[in-house]
Image (cartoon, rainbow, N blue to C red):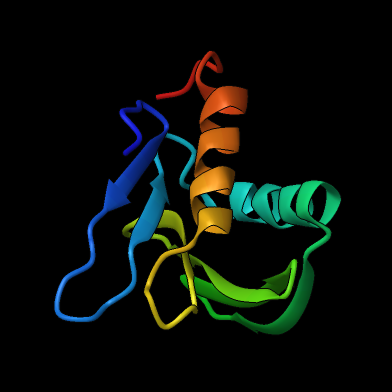
Length: 108
């Protein structure tokens, strides 16, 4: 499990997927940066996108796996696997990669 100041891993409850929250950089503009990060580093493609007034939800596909990236003005940005198990090695790898890249970035 990740011990982090950047990524908060919310354990699965009642069959829901494990969610990875990106802490400190929770605005909608960073959501766009995350989409570009997934495209560039994980060859992700946006399959479905929904952009609302205060929420955004994108389904992406990377390495044969579907996952969700979501944003809420009240909560921030988070992602999770669509795999039946509710988590995957890909999500864990992405979380560790983001932690490594963002751990020294100053934010509030």
